[in-house]
Each structure stands twice: as C-alpha cells, then as structure tokens.
Length: 94
Image (cartoon, rainbow, N blue to C red; front, side):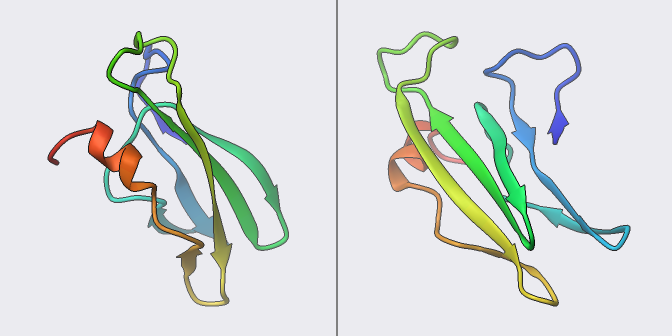
C-alpha cells in the first residue's frame, strides 16, 4: 500500500503490485480512499473498496464494500471485475 503520510481513512491510497522483486504497477490508475487489502494467497490479492454516499461524514463511508480480486496470470496482474460505477460516480470527474 502507498498511503498518505499522516493521512486519515479518507486519504487516498494505492495498492502496489510486485512480482519477483519487479514493480508491476498499481491496482488502479487513480488513488482512492477507504481502500485496503483484505486477502492474499497463491496468485490472488483481494482489495476492498468503500466510498462515501452524499450524506456520509468522511469518517464513515456507507458505500460498498466491493471486493475486487487481482490475479497474476503469469505475465501480468488482471483485475477480476471493474470498480463499481457507484463508487466511481462518488468521486466525480477525474
């Protein structure tokens, strides 16, 4: 995880992937708040995403959770499904 030093739960972070000491890139092109790795085993890493609904305080996202599996296919990391549109919409235009 690449997180904001001194940040809070609402600070954006990135999940970084490595294979055999080689940096492969990030799980997503943009960083998102309320992101955490919830599982890893074999060739799969599971990442949980949450997001704010319009009435939520920054401390307490009610959106989600959505768990996305990222799998090493032998040559690259493959995202198991796209991020939920509701989550992307909550961040506005990027």
